[in-house]
Image 1 (cartoon, rainbow, N blue to C red):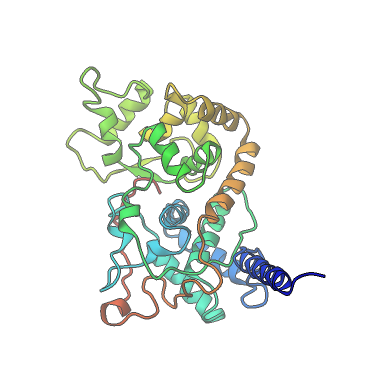
Image 2 (image 1 turned 90 degrees about the vertical axis):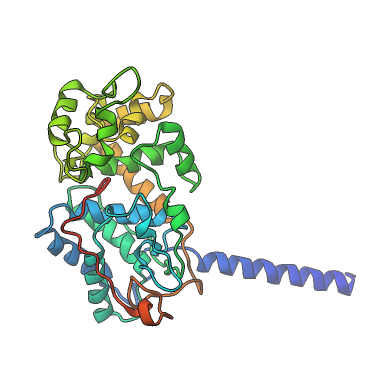
Length: 352
């Protein structure tokens, strides 16, 4: 016969195990999360994004980039959307974001439309995930079923935002930053492929054009003809915010030309060309060459890598909140209730 204490211990272990399994189940993102509470949320998001593009050809790339900059900082929790308040130091003022990321007005429009249809149900974090998918697909890229169920953070992290992947990063640094959030070399090369659409400011390009090193003026990994074109658009001492197409072939279309550009030494940023030209780029170079000749392989990989990125530390269950307004936490007062819509039309971007 079992000892009563042993039986009690066994029952306690079973109870703890069931509780852990229940928590894990609750934390699982699901494509059907809003099926019974806001079944048309994807359609609302897609319609609003498509309408925004009619007056802003760059918006698809900009909205996709917002999701990247959210997920790489304390997970996919909508923290990038929070503005300054008595309790929040906005990530938007971090060096990689300031006067760079854009599209907040469109996110606000989407949130308003979603709140009108399903008040208090859909998180801003999930809106960013849905917006990225819609933007990529509407630009000619793949579609995928977005996993949902994220909740919104009540904090921001400007320190982490200052450590986002940079246009100036070498391959080793990029690999380290991706690995820190659980993403591998395949994810690095694949997600970098989002630079197949959008624009980049001259301030992120000129270090490759002028006084590159003590021995050469121009980055030797730049195609000489392409370098001349960039010099014309970004003259030394010129306007640092002038925009350049990230993809000189099809700048507004989501396709695999980004990888062909790298083969032709036409990566706009150091961080782009490093994927192929770094002497240690054995793993990443083979992926670049594969995607350059196989757009379907790139699209398939992009879908998986976006899902991987979307799974970075989401808040679920009772964690966080569902913000009523994406730019402020629900419990705010005074300045926290002031809605700031960033004026995007005059802003450039590192990559958008």
